Length: 225
Length: 304
Image (cartoon, rainbow over all chains, first blue to last red; front, side, top):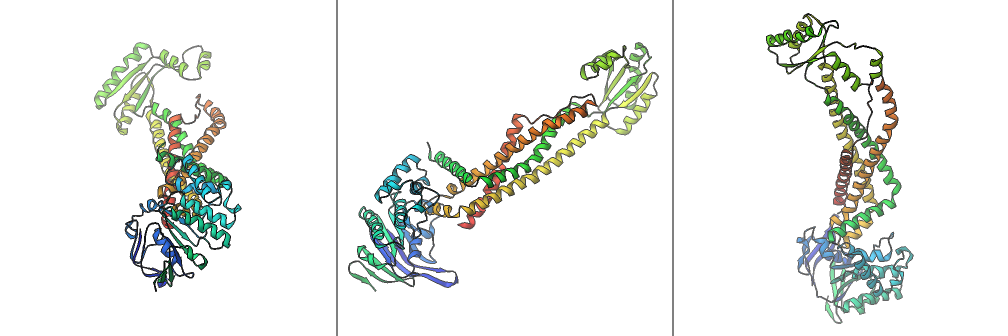
């Protein structure tokens, strides 16, 4: 479970990214964070991953207060998360298999075990036949699917996807979202930020953000304003 | 295979991957560090060659008393009594040894390359002699004793042997101190070179570091490949410096041999033994590791 308790985030120059956010996300939900660029969607995801810390309030991830988390414990928490970033952050000098193996390698997994699990993850996103290709030889949609394979290879409890369909055509965007829905159906909590409203009907809940505040929420019914 | 071992194996592989990507820069850094290490290693090689000579020589005051060549053996041996009396009068303790001229000749034939020259002389040109080893190091008292011995009948020449040995020992000590300061200075140079090389490497891998951090890599996991690279740089540079010094001894020894021949000596420089060499390799590897450690800690603390 993820909880935001009156969370605010101020950047230098008093730019306010989040204002007094209170939010509870149950295990296994597929949530879309919607809203325009600069609404605070990425900041909210970064707080769950421990990349950003709140200026005030409290963020709890699986019962762990992120503000009180020791720097040495952060890597172990991140191993339980699957991160999909807008720019994928793939290592372009390594094969996609090596990229997908990386989250397992950092945990000290044996190379042969990491490789077999990475191949399974690539199979799930339909890219196992391109295991030895370099990221830059793939299309944008394929690169995003590699990022998904890398995010799920560690069998995370939570997947955080920041604009995973940005710069993708509708066909590729659907493939990416379908892949995420498969994991959500297996009990994984998925938080997806997107400013593209055409996919929102696929979510179990949609949270609208604007100027760092929750302006609206929807779960089939209108639940907040 | 334990996780710890696997992590180190991965770090070592990553270090080699980084090296392959920047072989030219790495080899240049190895060369720079090797040059910095070569100077103290050369100095140490020289000291290790000189030390056995200086330690074999006595630093205690020693007086050689040469009896006049025509003195009969009985008179020569009887000379020990007035010498011992002088020692007693002056309150000086010492050991007096008589060296018959036959023994002196045989010893000279055995220990120098003058055997052929000596054999051409037909007779023994050496006189009977005494060697007086003293425990007292008072220069004034020593000078007075020398004058008193010179005045004895049948004494031809009196020679104080310890002065130049003392000077050599003092010079070796000064050289050792100088070498220590040079080694410390150049050790700092090595650390600085490795620090800067690692800094550039960390900057060029910033994207990779941030990705692995996001994927749950610990600081140790991120730091380790750079430690291995630094240690490897130090090790290779140490090996190169040792090899270069050892290789330079061959032509140097040719020149030394010519010079030593003038002093009837067969002195030659030999490379450092296995243990000192391994010790130096360990030190250079440690310096490389230190440079990398300081650099990575600083760079990644800033980045995070």
